[in-house]
Each structure stands twice: as C-alpha cells, then as structure tokens.
Figure 1 (cartoon, rainbow over the protein chains, first blue to last red):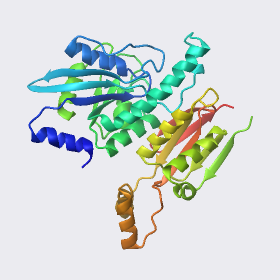
Figure 2: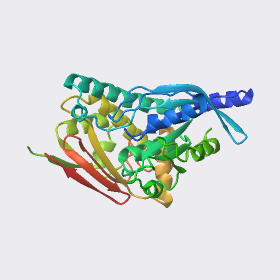
Figure 3: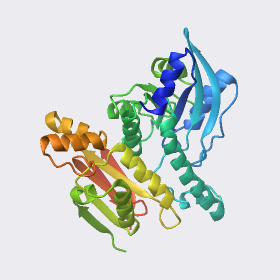
Figure 4: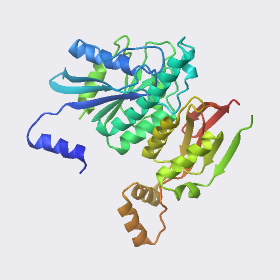
Length: 207
Length: 136
C-alpha cells in the first residue's frame, strides 16, 4: 500500500471527507487555464490564473482549494490544480514572435522547463486528472500518449476534455477515435458550452 | 549541415539502468543524432526522459521529439511483459522459476525514434505509423 492509498484508507476508516485533488493536464495552449477558470468561476466566483495566447503562460502550478461542486445530489470538494503545459521541447525563439525581448524569452523558456518538471512531479499527488486536448489539433501526439500511459500505470482516473469545440476546425471525434478507452467530454471552456456535462462526468469518475 | 541517423539495438539500451540510458540517449540527441531503436519505453520512463530533457534545455538545445510504435502483444508475451512491469523481486523470481533471462530494463517490442527538436520539424503519427519531417 503506497502513501496515497494509505491516506485514502485512513480518511475512509475514520469517516472523514477528503478533498479530491483534480489535476488539469495537457499540452501547451489547449485551454487548461481557461477551463480551470471556468470551473472555479462557476463554483467560487473567482478565477485561478491568467490566460494568454503566448505558449507557457502557466509556468507554475496554480491552485484553487475547496471548490465545492453540487451535481444532482452529489457533493464534491475539489482542490483544482492547473498544471503548466507538458512539452518535449521549449525553444526561446518561439516566444520572440510575440514581441518580447530576447532576455524575457529566455527567462520564459527557462521557467517553462521548470514548469514541465513540476507538472510531472505532481503526477504522484493528484487523485483525478482532466486531460485537456485541443479539438482543432491532432490528438495523437507523444505527449498525450505518454500522459495517458502514466495515468493508467498509476491507476489515476482520467477524463479527456476535448476543448475548443466552438472553433470551426474542431474535430472532437478524432480524440474519441484516438483514445477509445477513456471518457471524453466535448466542451468549449471559453464559451461555457457543454460544461454541465463535464461536471456530471467529474461527479461520476472523480475519486 | 549533416544529420546522422543511428539505429541502435534495444539490447544495448536495455542493459543500462534508466538514468544511464537517458544520459546516453540525450548525449546522442544533443549531438544532432536521430536515434531509432527496436523497443518502446514504459510511460514512466518516457516521462523521466522528458523531465531530464527539460533540465538540459538551453538556447542551443530546445529539446527532443519522440515517436514510438508499440507492437500489440497477446497471450504469454503479454503475461511476461505484465510481469516485467512489476517490481524487481517479481522479475527475479520469474527468472529463477522459468530459467528465462530477463534483461535489466523493460523496453517492450516496438519502435522508437528520438531526435533533436532543432531539426525535427514535425512528426505525424497514427496508431500504425509515423512520418518525420526534418529541416537542417
């Protein structure tokens, strides 16, 4: 029995309620922070973090604790964990096209690498994961495959969020085809489309 | 500018402990080599590779591109692989009981390509194949 399982057992044994640590993972610019903000705004009235079109805006784990969800008759208390985007490469030159200085770009790149490492370390401390994917992009990437493989190996429940369905080029069906083993919820975190379905799915799978 | 492709047997990588294997891979890739091997890393090993890559990213090395294809396994082979995913004790016990030599690591059957992101511009992947576009 590892420490996490021991804690679960301990809380259950004494009839205590434990907050579910909900990790929001995915590649960069798939809308993780937009989704975290939407969930947090809906249930607490406050945002989690800043959203930007520049990749790696979230370079540190952003938390929103004690987010209480009431779905049908079920109550859940979540600690939302908005993770830095996962990547296998971070090139400071990619940031220069957003009109930031070379020095700032290098600093951003360095912080982004640290963010990826932090996000990976947190994999051992989350209870349930929302794996966010951009419906306008090819979902069959090595980062997505590696992320889902790790979650499966650790027996962490995962819900795939096919985000950005408000965009014309969105093809969420490709995500379902690529990962048929997992529950997939199609949403637009930006427009709030189908978010109620996501809450129901979280209530069903989160533990 | 030249780009070197190195095809390396999974046996060579398999014999190394994970830390040394990752150092070996990143050493080659940082030198501009595209490595291709007849094995697939476990998800946690691949995550360790990504983590170590991030530690090595600098202005001259933006990181790596990885693509792998895992050969579907069934029957006894799946059982063996499942056991190899377990602890070292189980591996050793299985080795003693069956007389089968289980190698130090756990590269599964398949194929993996790892190369420098500086030169690999795109990897198009589907469950049965992947194509790589390079720009040197």
